[in-house]
Image (cartoon, rainbow, N blue to C red; front, side, top):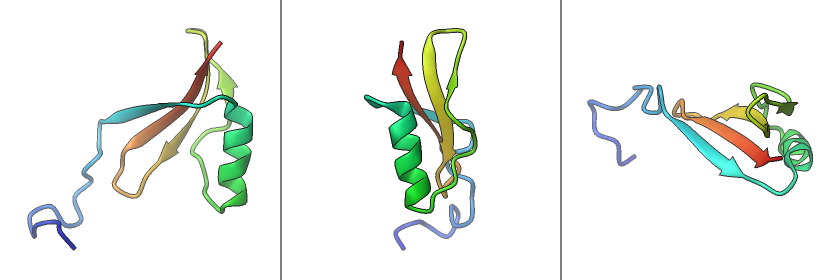
Length: 69
């Protein structure tokens, strides 16, 4: 493990969101479910024009998977 002793167990991604643009949000969500992943939210249309869902990675990063409408 390349992490130093001071960062082991720390929630490295806390407060950080990474946006990932995909062609089809619903298909990508279904693909993740089929692989055994458990997104935090289901795909939803947002007032700002995106269709998106949220997935958390093991380090605590928030991954927002979206498609601009």
